[in-house]
Length: 178
Image 1 (cartoon, one colour):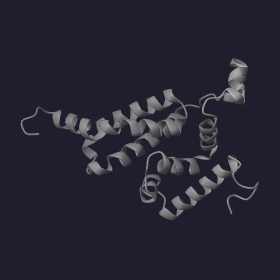
Image 2: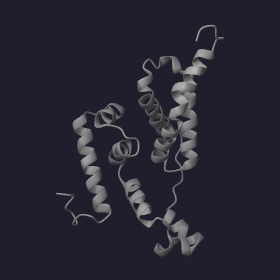
Image 3: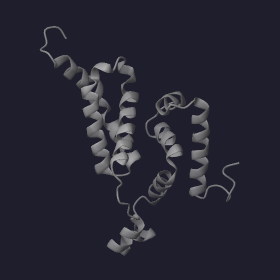
Image 4: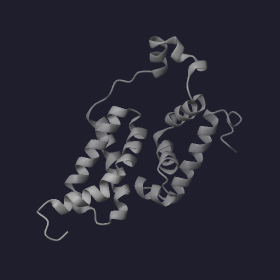
């Protein structure tokens, strides 16, 4: 990076380190927000904050964790500022088209069912499960990311899977996988 103009080293570093992680940030933001537009806003704010403070990123190997932490905080900031109106999607689908609401006409019904079950999990269980399954994080990385110890991560993952099995009807009622 010798002989570059001011600002160019940061621009190059951003392009080399941060840009390749954009898809991971978006996937994580989408799981957090459950809404494409909100996820895109979170990604945009995350990248803007990362751009402004790229000099504070000492270890490029920690970039993914750093960005996901920024994304999680940006998502939380959205809900600190305003409350979004919520709509029951099942009711909306039935109003828009009875055919869409029919179980017989849903594409990829198993995927849809599993996705709904995951989204229905409480945040404390959904987040570590998504980080592990979707993002490929180890329990150590999840613990660091969520500021909890590895034992707590393992407990949350265990409970998340049991709750997911129960929601999908894969365990006896009230058994929680025991």
